Amino acid sequence: MLPEIVSFPEGQRIWMVRASGGKHLNNFIHNNVVAISHVDEFLLDWPLSELPSLAQITEFVNGSHDAKIKSLVVGELDEELLADDEFGFDDSRVDEYEKNTSAINRINQTDTFINKISIGDLIVTLDKDCLVVGCCESEAYIGRDILLYSNYNQVTGKAKVETLGYKLRRDVTWGDPISRSLVGSSLRKPLLARNTVSNLDEYWDKVYSLVFSVFTRSEVVYFSNRINRSEAISTRAISRLFEYVSDTQLFADSIFSGDFDLEFFNKVVSGDFFEFALEDRSTSQAEFMSPGNIYYQVVKPGSVDVKQYAAILILLLSLGISGCKENSLEYTSAAEGVKSFLIQRNMAEEREDSVEADANTDLMLRQFKDFSDNKKIANVANNLKLDIGINKSGGRKSFSSGKVATSRAKSKSVAVGDSKLISDQYELGL
Image 1 (cartoon, rainbow, N blue to C red):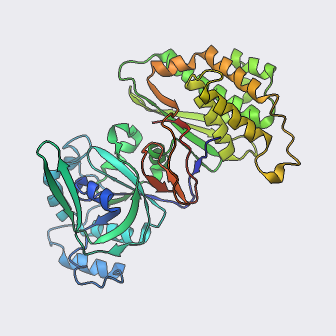
Image 2 (image 1 turned 180 degrees about the vertical axis):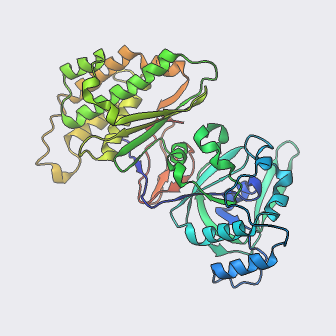
Image 3 (image 1 turned 180 degrees about the horizontal axis):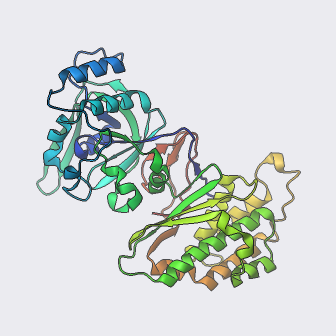
């Protein structure tokens, strides 16, 4: 069975919400919420059934703010705070810092939390060790109950109860924590933003790459590798990896065009592929420093469905890079997946679908296996300690409609529009 692919739902936005330097992350996750405290005093006696207007919030914040606090530029970084450590967290200064946040920031961030975040948007929260991505499941609301999280210390044998009383809240379905060591360099600086609420729309693909093995947007397929080797790496190995990805794109193209034959196969194996104009459709962005990440973007060809193209491309990449043997379970599964895809996709096409897959599919995969062996791509992956290939972790429980599994954060789910469950069978990336 071919893997199902997640598509970025147009209109979805991505927000980072970090309260008190991240010290409430566990409480957020445990209670399936995200919350801020900017106008808690104002909400003490406010009706639970309604939210204050922007004008009312502005009047309260301006009236209650200490006169010595002057308006600061929204989003400006506090260099002294960020200099405390790599990720910009110093819990000893957080409370003092947040009390002195400018009035305009408090107003804008409260307005964003109430009026600009939408159901279905992604929420990122974090502390100095990890980040978590979730999906907003509710409009903003006021909650006055105290949220609890019990943290059991195995060393002392005692439980520490952490409390959260922030009143302005939204419900969130969270994925699993992701180590900040896996965050690419292009995303690290945005995560240092001092604001409690900030926008990450510009970095949507990097956030998605942390959560999903492969995804699409418009006509583009996105996927990534994680190089885990900490010492110096072979330039030849990196070169061969990029070459292999480009060649695999050609094989995927040929499946949809019907051009796959022995002559085509020999051209790819011999490296005679410049006639195929890959430069216009396949790009990579590398930012690894052993370890590190490589990001790929491949534009699908012609009128081909982008999800179908992504599924075949990822299947072939997994088949080669995993180094699976002919007649193995992985190889058989791949062959059956391609065969069923080529024969017919639904009953409505039964009378018109004339692809002769039975005679050609196994031959194609066998030739592709020979090609992969010739490239020794499995050895390249091993040399780079490349985290890529077929996931052998087994099945996954079903999720409700509209949920997709976070294939890099295994046990929870994140809602992304109407996307379906990602298959665990073929997983590339981090």
